[in-house]
Length: 324
Image 1 (cartoon, rainbow, N blue to C red):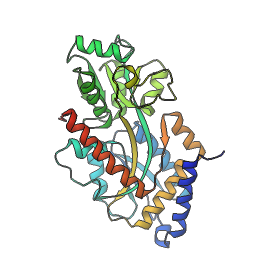
Image 2 (cartoon, rainbow, N blue to C red; image 1 turned 30 degrees about the horizontal axis):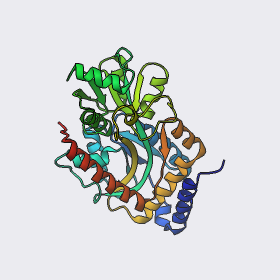
Image 3 (cartoon, rainbow, N blue to C red; image 1 turned 45 degrees about the horizontal axis):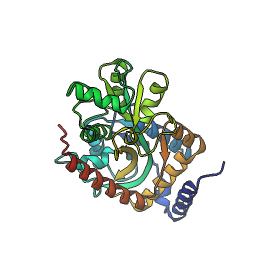
């Protein structure tokens, strides 16, 4: 199978990093490695992290275990990693919230730029706006009409207050001129269960978490949140083309180590992550579930992260969003 040019570039960089890595970094891992996922099991980043952990175990001969530490839209798990030894044995796989939290929370126990070593952006993903089939809404225009007829009565769930899906819903509320109620859950999986059961009317979630339930008819996809349609559901329009022009909210997954981790070890971590998620079987699964493979090298990832923090800070301020 021929690799895409972007993947060829990433693999080439990774290979160069291997040649420059000292013996100390090459001897890693020396003991089991924890990959902290700061969300409940079953969500998008949890799925990606488990695929990565499996490949890292195969590639290095070490033991990589995913540990779920939900709470605070990713803050609790991230804080745990910040406090760990910078030796590559405690890592963080987190979502868009890593860049959103500085905008929506008055005080964080860490600085997302200063206190972490930034390994790579793993992948990017769209969100799906999905509703329970009993709600009489099939598209964005019908949703807006119903919300305006019943202001403050419709509910939508997300993986947690201050997360990417939550802000996607708040941004929709602001741009569509409606009022609805956000119901936060401790992870994407509980939010999905809530909308499937009818506990809430709608949910915003990553394609990887909602896609199969939409295909099974348990949920009705109203729209996707990116600038272009999702290949896995080509019949579902974007929010922007459905009556809310200019709307866009997408997610992504990042890979981090504690601040102070040596550049050589960060390069080794990046190299192994490229090999793992770049494997044909993993990449195919990622794409089928709605993820776009990225694997940017550390220096590019930190530039991207700075841009994301600035973007979401501007959105929060302009939309006057408030996170309880």
